[in-house]
Amino acid sequence: MPKVIYMSSAGSSREVDVPVGMTVMSAALKNGIDGIVAECGGVCMCSTCHVFVDEKYFSKLPPAQDTEEAVLDISAEERQPTSRLSCQIKMTDALDGLTVRMPAKQR
Amino acid sequence: MPAGTLIIGTGQAGFQTAASLRSEGYQEPIALLGDEPHIPYQRPPLSKAFLMGKESAESIELRPRAFYPDHNIQLLVGERAVSIEPVRRRVNLASGASLPYEKLVLAVGARNRLLPIPGAQLDGVLYLRSLDEAAAMKQRLENAREVVVIGGGFIGLEVAAAASSLGKSATVVEALPRLMSRVVAPAISDFFKHLHTSRDVKIKCSSAIAEIAGPHGKVSGVKLADATFLPADLVIVGIGVAPNSDLARDAGLAVANGITVNENLQTSDENIFAIGDCSEHPNPFAAARIRLESVQNAADQAQHVAAQIVGRPGPYRSVPWFWTDQYDIKLQMAGISQGHDRTVTRGNPESNTLSVFYFRQNHLLAIDSINRPLDHMIGRKLIAAGASVTPEQAADESLDLKKLVSSVGQHAGHSGNRPN
Image (cartoon, each protein chain N blue to C red):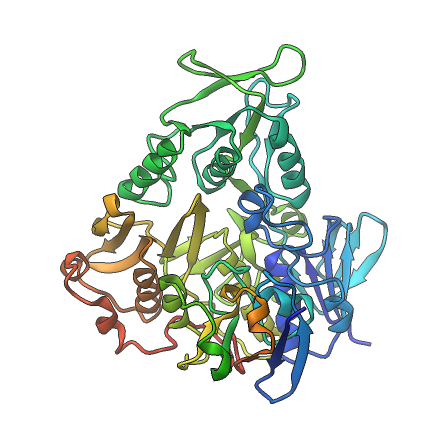
């Protein structure tokens, strides 16, 4: 099963097995990763599942849709070039090892 | 040992209060109590992805079961609070137990309004608010052929979209002349009427229900006031909710259309807060006391109360926002349009992209957007900042609204007494 590495803003990290098709947001909630809030439940309305994707993996992701782009503009911590909403990243085998860093604040 | 915080209600507001208290560093006990048998879950998917089998009871859990012990939150499900004793600071439960509190948070939600007509008790007449009700509806939908939905608001239309997507024949009956008319402009109502009609859902507006028929105890159809008969083997009623105010009223707290709170979300007892669907609060974006039924309001009010309990008082002022998903269309709403005296449309319905800007005295109150997510986010920023565009700017498609808000600031979408 492909793995995702979640890094907290403080620098600690956790490696989690994520089934193909599950979003990086859902996997975080299921595994008790505290840096993801996911207030709207994954429908691209709230920006509280914001992550900074490791550059090595960022280019492997399908590009963000307009809605995600707009929502990233209201993230609590300012967006960066590799910002994504983790609710919009679906796991694939090609993403094995995906590393995401979570912002210090989501709300 | 201090009594800590007791939260009544395990919906989004109750859950978020507990979660936010812990992330704020609150060290005292937290008890989270609710009468539903389930651990806290998301309600929005119930009328959408859950009905269509794309989400499950487990996948809509707000957090896994282990979250609560891991965060030292005492979760008491299937427990009903029957009375509050504000002077003794205790809450009495139906089970006979009694819990102390230092701070009490009422996140008790709302209940469905019931249809006051003959036949409403028949087998096959369903309502939707809880997971159990959604699970029952999902099961009944499997074998249903003809579904009549009573109520053309968000819930009714979402359920109609789900039923239609599952291959059922669906008819929506709405008493008022257009869909979602209490909250959206005619252009949005028209768009959704057309959307549903194009998916073979029949929409009957300005139609009163005379009775639900069912000669053998099971629903067979819906009779309208004009004597039209709509055959149905499943009738789904979505005609709004009433706030759960009884517990507060019986405790002597002020109650109006919901539990009355001040700008800090405190009830008439300073140790008791009321948040979420049940909270009638002064809302600066409506310039009125209102009650809001939304995830945003539940979560933001919860966060706000958590901040107050850990010692950061201040007025609640978060921009209201809402959404509804019907088929592949998402309607995003920012602000409160009530009281508007002018609307301006941007985009066009033929291309499935449309925003309606609502103004009062040329000041922006709200924006409703279909497939124009940038307009929605711009609305949230502008409204949070108390800024506006002019109606002329809103109407001018050649104008980049994003440029207008760049001066408003990156974090204008967030407000209130949050950290930083």
